[in-house]
Amino acid sequence: MSNASNTAFTHLDEQDRPQMVDVGGKADTERTAVAQSRVYLPPAVRSCISGQELVTKKGAVFQTAIIAGIMAAKKTPELIPLCHTLLLNHCSVDIKLEGEEAVIRCTVKTFGKTGVEMEALTGASVAALTVYDMCKALSMEMVINGTKLITKTGGKHGA
Image (cartoon, rainbow, N blue to C red; front, side):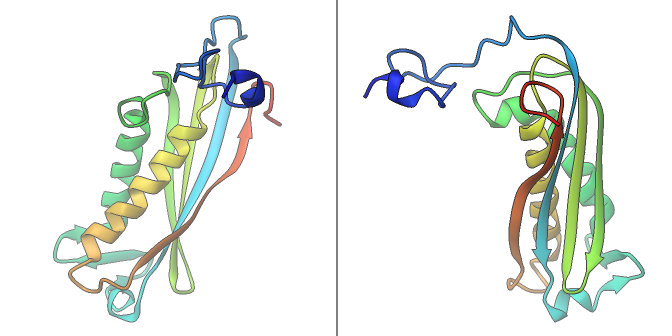
């Protein structure tokens, strides 16, 4: 299969081999991305909610998940093989309770040649996994879903 049929796959070279995209010719711009994950919290888990925090024997779940999400966003190129190493100017994780779910949003900003979508998605995903890990002793009925990019700005395809 030739790359001519895969022009949308920028991570493939002319011989269809994996490659890191060459961003050398791109302009540096401010780039942001917001990603979201949702965690369904069954009744056994929701019973441990105090205000806007979930507290278990392992500690403050949401505060720990926030830190894990930020750490994960910073380590994205170590986890996703073809991601560029970026200097992140900002990363935040926000967790809100909506009904039976914890809604996790990760916002990442940089000034550079490539976007931060993967960093935001990684941050939201790892924060969700941390909620799961810290609560699995209470219930294994939790479900992580709805991981998606909410917005991005900067670059050719940004708003």
